[in-house]
Amino acid sequence: MKKNRILTITMLTAFVYSYSFAADVYIYNGGEGNLLHTLKYVQKITFTNDEMNITLADKSVKDIKFSDFNFFSFKPKGDYTSLVQETTDDISVSFNGVDILSIQSENIISKVELYSMQGLKLKEAGSDLNHYNLSLASYPVGIYLVNIVTEGKTVTHKIIKR
Image (cartoon, rainbow, N blue to C red):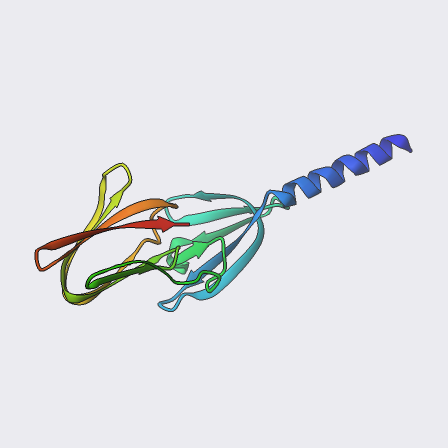
């Protein structure tokens, strides 16, 4: 009888432990980011050449082909609020903390450059508009610098991706 209680307690502890260190994953597809899957208690995510393999706390594995989704996150879409990071003179930069960096300017934005904190240029894009949206969805959580060039003037903003 005592052996059965120890086994039951051990199994219950393993169950609680595995679920307590799990995260929920939200998988989206489509231009508007339609929710395809909500996976609860995800323990591990691995990638192959053509799919994402998600191991749940119950040890089951869900395989999702890259062609079936656009992005995934650990918080549901809409849980983030748009935060204006900085406004300088004629340039306004806002970032929702997850994926979209929006730049508005009174002048034409001729170039946008994204840098890591180590100084590595990650992206450079040209524009001939007074607004520009840059997706940071494929970049890891961290701090980034964005240089915005308008009519010969360069402004640098710090971006924090959570």
